Amino acid sequence: MGHKKTVSIIGSGNVGEHIAALLVLKGAVNIRLFDLPKKDGEKLYPHVKGKALDMLQMACAVGIDSDIRGYVVDQEGNGYEALLGSDIVVITAGFPRKPGMSRDDLLSINISIMNTISKKIREYAKDAVVIVVTNPVDIMSYAVYKLLKAQKHKVFGMAGVLDSSRFRAFISLELNVSPKDVHTYVIGGHGDEMVPLVSVSNVGGIPLANLLEEKKIKEIVERTKFGGGEIVDYMGTSAYHAPAASVVEMIESVAFNSHRILTCSAVLDDDSAEYYGAKDLCVGIPVKLGENGIEQIIKVPMTDYEKELWYRSIASVKKNIKLADEFISKYL
Image (cartoon, rainbow, N blue to C red; front, side, top):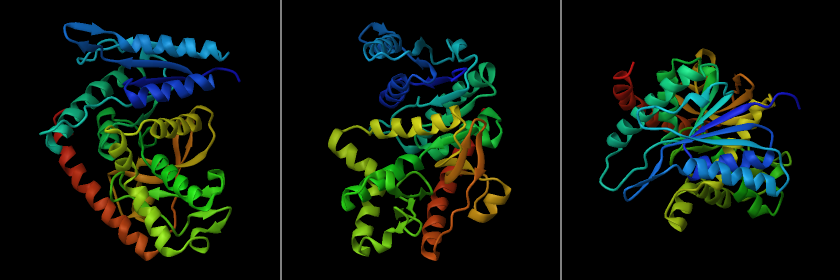
């Protein structure tokens, strides 16, 4: 296999930890895990070191050669030296919304966290491909792209892979077929206004509309849009198994130069900005991912009705990006 790529994951909460665990079990990359210490009363626990050691021992238990290490960092940005040599950096760190916090407060806090992390990536891993997972993902991907002053193809967010896998899961359950044979795209903002593209969705090459009644398709589309909320209602916390697996799909396409076509929150450039009618924002669209990040933005055909939904979706992303720009400009 030759030289193993190094993947650094910033933030070892539920999603970060599960990304690391899946990568460990595949044994195909070196993993560096970074997080703040955990406070319990007066005591600070370097839990990221414990998680990395636990996962290393898990790999040994199942007979997999793996290299994973944990590093404690602080809020000022100290402790990131081990980012050096990273090929891919995944950002899952961020502040969850607390009761009584406005969206603006959350945006302001998370953009300041993205600024600290971006500085460290610039210092130690300026050539790395950066995958943003922190929510709201379209806004955070845009913020990291701006703060890193990176090339457009190097920074993108995890959104559509997760939404598309939810759409595929519900279709495969309904039709009792393997999800391997279900092909879907979910584009637009990663939120309630996402756009599952029914017109190009198919099962074994057969259009979805030929296999399910319109009413059933609508139900599945709605369930997909609120797929994250459904899990929050059950668990009282957001999903992490499917989001982590979705990030791993993206990591592998970059690490192994696989040229997979996956929906990511990407910066629309000249040609694609014209096609999609959106400029200077990050939003979920199908892209081809290889070792340098985004190699090509795919122009997916849409019906008039889907275009209408698409424009509605990007309007809400634009509004939020305008707000984010005010916070980002403080750091530029």
